[in-house]
Image (tube, rainbow, N blue to C red; front, side):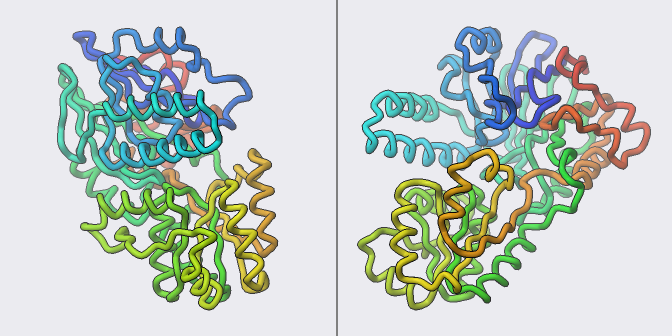
Length: 420
């Protein structure tokens, strides 16, 4: 078996990992687009010729989850190359694409609408996998294991061939609502020959990651002090949305979103609501300018409203502000803080609420302590291969035994290929 990190060994996002068996059977794990902030240069794989060269001889692409920096090129992959993803993650992507299609059609952007329609058609041909159920691509066996992340339906992937076992962690954490499952999952996987593991947070400030439960409690405390709550957060960060929804039920106010967000929450409830009431979201209200019954409840009782930076929400918020006291109102910004610097339109949107703004957020990525736990527990025989980390991050700074540190593979070696 040979592992090659085409991208991700020295940058966050844009992940592309190749695993090739002795027979020449080759798969990719993730085929991600660069994050917008990663470089001012265009992504080199946006070029069809370059992407075609990269994909030469590939039997399949398997995605750990649906974030764009892991699955961003799915629509450009030839139809004769199968693509795999969890069923819920695939549906979340479809919801997003359908929203993009509706937006393009309303705006009369014909070319963009055709591009999105093509992406939906490609997505509909995805093959789906289920957690802990092994599937095969030629002589390569793959077993997905569900893991907590800020994306829905994220998985670690155990890859087995040529009598070797390799775990690709994708993006993971242990401080989400389902993060307690990490330790038993690792025990179930057992020792591996090589570990491909994310290191996103190693370049962060070193402060401990708050748990989603702590985030939920902080949100609830603000709901006790403010009548009207606007929340800026990802429409697919389901831990965050579920915590907000449950807090709002406790307070006895309406939880308000738009039709697209409601569609995503319905997908969450469909796949996970039967396992836990936390993710069973049945009573969210959808906003419109004509819903007088909702307006009456909102203005009398207060509300929690999850917002997006678009023209509809700007219109709705302008209407709502005419009927509420801004002294009783707060905007919670609950996503990566760097977006406010990178996206002037988002900064202006947050400022437009005209009320106090509070930052409450936690990372979707593993803390250094969680990374250490995975390395120690799986105790790879041959190699620890860091990915999804910036060039300045060093796994040798982790609190690991010397025998494990000796197995850490440098970025330049990983990019050339590692025989296992």
